[in-house]
Image 1 (spheres, helix red, strand yellow):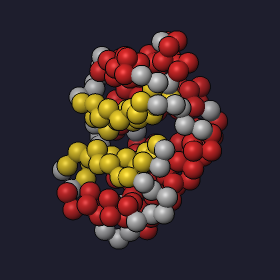
Image 2: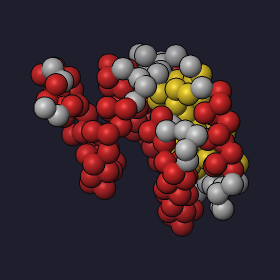
Image 3: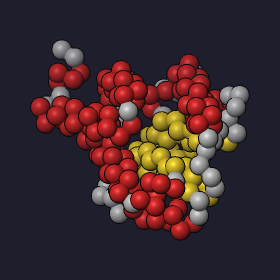
Image 4: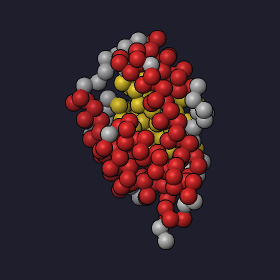
Length: 198
């Protein structure tokens, strides 16, 4: 019996709905990655399945609310990641007014416990920079999975303009190990910890 066959029908429906929502928000490539990795990450994630679904709901709600605001959707480049209700908001906004608007929107979403505001004031990053960020994320994830001091499944890696943000439920020792691995990867400019400690 597989892990997913053990899930109750309600949870299975929520996971399926979540994948469908993600496909409309971020395109086919993300759905393919999510479909491949979901089984392993759900089974080994330190969050409960309910908390994982809540975090995905926070992310979807944040993207939807920001998309409704024409000023934000047209002039900013924002990415939202939630772990146990702790939300990281990264990207670029042209001014503090739009940055603050985005943070207020996220802060009003049900389930948000705290916000790590890492929105930079400035121009939206180029496609080349965004492509490099994807590459850096894959390099960091590979290095974390290769480390014998941490479990790569326990850590979310988000990269924006060569700055790497690490999230997850980890011990202090695991957090330090993850930072040491990440800071030694070529191309990484800075490493930020947004962990919740066990």
